[in-house]
Image (cartoon, rainbow, N blue to C red; front, side, top):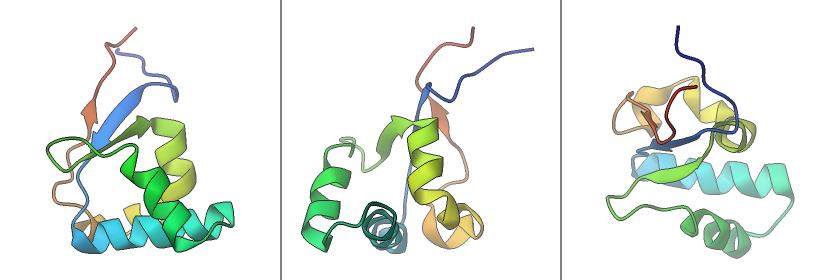
Length: 85
């Protein structure tokens, strides 16, 4: 069986509503203003409009958006960026 760590990086692909939700959740979870939240999220955007970060960070900051992923994600596929151990 393949093993993955919460430190492994993944890419998710949010919809427009998903990006807005990510900004709102980041603001709420980290007690920052909207501009600071947007700036931090932009650091992790990929050239193909995805969001790249470690699993623990994505689930910790944006876990709420996965309860209804069809609204917030372009695809339900999650791309792993690290090789399995």
